[in-house]
Structures are given as C-alpha cells and as structure tokens.
Amino acid sequence: MPTRRAIHIVDSHCHLDFPDFEGELDQVIARAHAAGVQRMVTICTRMDKEPAVRALAEAHPSLFYAAGVHPMRAHEEPLITVDQMVALTQHPKFVGIGETGLDYHYTVETKAVQQQSLRLHITAAQETGLPLIIHARGADDDMAAILTEMFRDRPYSCVMHCFSSGEALARAALELGFYLSMSGIAAFPRSDDLRRIFAAAPVDRILLETDSPYLAPPPHRGRRNEPAYTSYTASVGAGLFDMSEADFAAQTTANFDRLFPRARLSDQPA
Image (tube, rainbow, N blue to C red; front, top):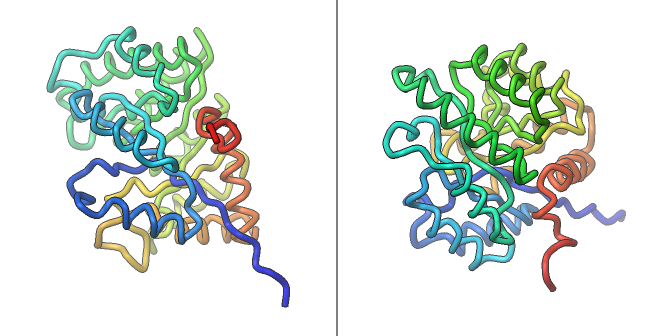
C-alpha cells in the first residue's frame, strides 16, 4: 500500500493565552501536533498581556507570537507608540504586528481612535518589515482606503486575518499583494459567498487559522475551538481549489513561510 503523505499545517492565528485553555495548554498543543499542525502563532490583543503571550512562545518550540492592540480595545488605554511596537519585535519569536484593524460592528463609536491605532501599527510594520495582521469587521470601505493609502506611501506585507468581509475588500487586499486567511467560518454551511471569494483568490495567497478559542468549524461548531481543528478548514480549502489535502496543506504552509519568515522551521535554532 502507498504511504500516506504527512500533512504539515500551520495555525497562523490563535489565542492560546485566553482563559479557555488554562490548565490544558500542553494537551491542546499535543493534539495540534497529532493533527499535523506543527506550528502556531498565538496573538496578543492588548499590551498588558504581552509578557504572558511571549512567555508561552518561549516555553513551547512550536509556538510563535505577534502582538498589537485589537481595534475593540484601542480606546481603553493610551495609544501604543511605534517605538514601543518596534521594541517588541526584537524578540526572536515575535513574527508579526497585530492584530489591529477596524471593527465597526461592535465599536463604531470609537472608529476615530481605531483608525489612529491602525495607522500606528501599519507604520511599525513598514519600519520593521514584519507582516501586519488585520482584523476587519463592518468597515470594508475605510479599511481598503487606509491600507491602500499607506501602502502607496511605503509598501508593507499583510494578512487579512479570519477573512469574512466582502469581495471588494478581498480584491483590494489581493491587489496590494496581501494574503487572505481562511478560518472555520469558511466551513460553515451558510458561507457559500465567502467560499466563492476564497476560490477566486490565488492559492498562493491563502493562509489557514483557527482564531481559537472562537469559530470552531464543523463538526465542532458551537464548542471551544483549538489549533488541531485547522485540519477541518484545510479540508474545505482543498476542495475549493481541487487539490489534495496534502497539497493544499503544503501550499498554505509555503505561503505562511513566505509571509512570516521568522517562523520558518529552517530558521529556528537546533
């Protein structure tokens, strides 16, 4: 019998510092490895949590981290400075700037400070060369305008995390050379429009993520999500691009390595 190809998947966006995983993180990581998820990027969404998120990445070889101020938190404390963000990037396991972005679905009343915060994060990405990690909800027009304006001033790399926005924002992001990240939402039964957006994108611009503990794909929908479940989303993505799961996993892993060069396995100390 032919040997089944080993699948190497990356969960490019999860939140392993959240209380949902307290006391169980070793088991969660072990289940991820067993499912073929060999690397994970755990995301810090507020600066007072950065030391704890950094400690997780330091303690686990397969974890990397990124940090920023979530748009829904941007109004809760003084704006982080570009210099403060640049200083964080000196850590060898720090791989990206964010998540940052705009969320008008829940916090439209703070959109002015969200836009200020977003611009500061973009500047940090421009100065460091590290990829920007974007959260966008209910703000497609402003998001496309700000990303495009600042890119034309000085290019930077970016991933639209947990992409679930409209076709126009997807097109704007792809035209800038950015990446779209596919979460469990793409596996939801009513996500036909979103699946069409992904299927129309170049396969070399697709990443995979869980955004765990949120958005578990079927058959775990409604329960806590975790990095191991990236494999379910990978299966859906493979079908969209008419690829085998192993080939799609390999492609999205290569995409991740291109966007997040600090997290390449070959770059890690033995």
